[in-house]
Image 1: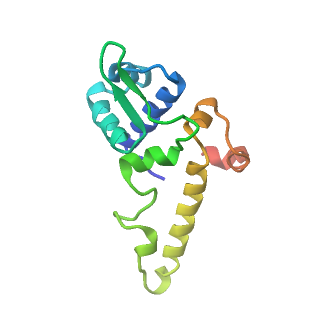
Image 2: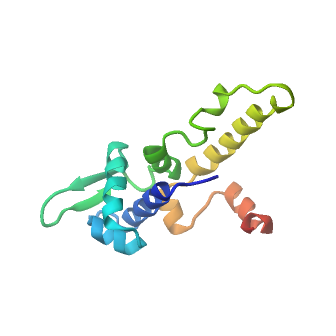
Length: 149
């Protein structure tokens, strides 16, 4: 799995907002909290707002908050808000791919990878990730030393 810097920033900002709860954070506060350049973060937050992940409030007490409860937003939701589909090959969804000869099974393997990725990323909410509370399947994966290298 490869995440762009933009997606990494979006996930980190969303987790900062999840940890802050109802307390709005400014772009500057979010950037400082995660070491993300505020100028770049503004564009990421705009994408998250269009994706229904965050909302902005103007004024003295303004800033960014999550648009829904941190329990209702999965890591997959955040990734989709900035990157679109979870898994694709050069912008094409795996089920739309067609391979020939010995490579024919690659399409099925890529669909399986997407299904596993979806199961994990949709199964972890922002609240779960902030609390480092993971589903049993994820814990089993993490218990394997190979997961860490």
